[in-house]
Length: 388
Length: 196
Image 1 (cartoon, helix red, strand yellow):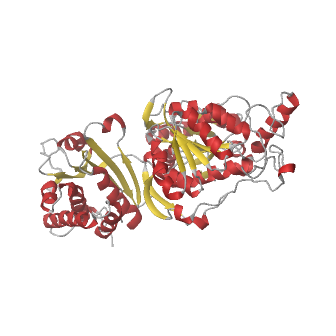
Image 2 (cartoon, each protein chain N blue to C red):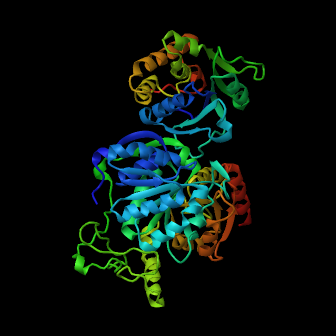
Image 3 (cartoon, chains in turn red, green):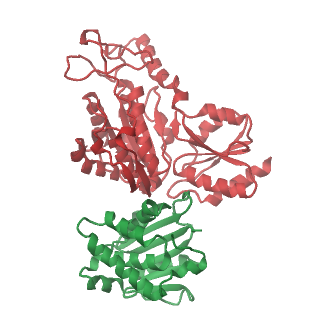
């Protein structure tokens, strides 16, 4: 798979919102196929992609719904494309089956969720971060997921490229978990020259068709893909399958396959972990926040520091796999984690699990529809500070 | 030292409110190297004919993306004025389209400056460019962004082929502002230093 044409990359400084930046990130990553069904607040991503597609040699299909969109990109990926889809709210629920299919068939693919208030139709135009556990556990069966959370339009661009790269490297669906605030805010976005963008190429096999087994893993648990139309025969199914790709209903096949699907991500959790850390050196209280909430939490951190509270911030950028090792380390020496998220308690469960009772874990919840008032976070920090 | 500005530009659909915000934001962050976060009003609050764009312009990275106070309100309709004037800080500043907004006595002592932006735009040949007249007025009165940055921003923000007209509209607003102030930005007396 060739890197994007330099002419496709809009190198330079721009003033654009997170949704448009995510689209440009996809194009810079070499995405040449998207399928989608418009849904607020994600629509601008594919709207822009549809406009840009003829200029960059890509294809956009507007599908009849999210089920069709999410399976179309997987078909496109097997046909050789780098493909993504975009959704929000109820659309994300509808895509769950095909996220599992992508995991089972090891199809490189990127799913973007610009999170809005829920449940159900909820608040279509307003922010939330309430799909974080659905991102991890939404499809049935055992699988692992990779998910990233940008907190600015610049990061929407950057992390979209990372999402594509991870999806190729691990042959796994990757989720870009945005939120309405980040998607709709406009800031400076710097797009580097095309030759400075690292692209992880598709793992194409160099084996002869007669020797190729489509689901036989290479050394790092990830199998290679065949180029269509070059004489390779392969079968792709959501059924439990052997190294030939053929269905097999034996528990041994299930164990080998599911063990590998889970293991190929878990074994690389350290490689995948990415966090931003602020003032943790002397921190007694650690704010944990991601996406838009991390910016509001940083504001609260600064206010709390002015009052003499020793507060730090840990921002998971890759949220799945969860940076549990880092939380475990910090739990040995800090008093408390204060988790700020636009939901009624999702990632806080992971923090609490990793802290394992060594540090207290406090949630600052918010039902979504707005971001936390910074003062509401400062208030909690003051209270937690007074416990010591 | 420059300060953080929290700005709302509001009016009704078709006045180019969002584009005015984009021009200011792009000028500040691409050409004046400040940090800017721009948000638009989405959802029920933006339905009907109302349009509003919010900007935070700061020498520091912007953390909280929404307005926490209002330093500068640019009101291009009566509704925008009525709805948002009470949000202005005590030392805040109101710029308004004087043919479309009638001030009431709800905020006595407010620093308020009117401009017949629509008429000035019409005199240039197109009513549509009233937003750039307003941008010029804003730049002349406040130095939120430099006039040089604003001109560069207009050049890349407006539809191709309309750069000259839009820049003329900007200059008209700037000229009107300088006539009001006698050449100095009004807020310079309060610690806002014009960009070098």
